[in-house]
Length: 43
Image (cartoon, rainbow, N blue to C red; front, side, top):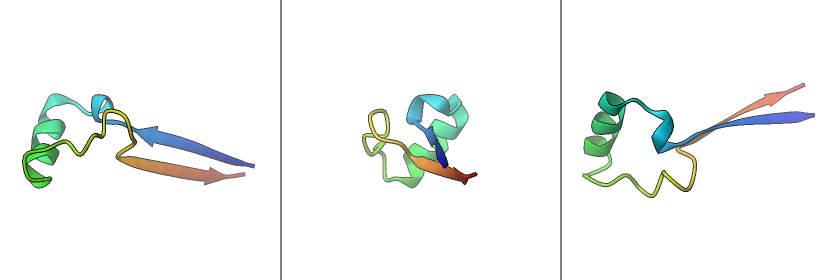
């Protein structure tokens, strides 16, 4: 069985959001509706 943990824009603290925003070229890439990352865990 597989479990997923998704990370969204709102999960990040303000400092991390600002750093990622600058890294992505001054846009958040719509990561408030799609995950920035998904961590998969297999059982």
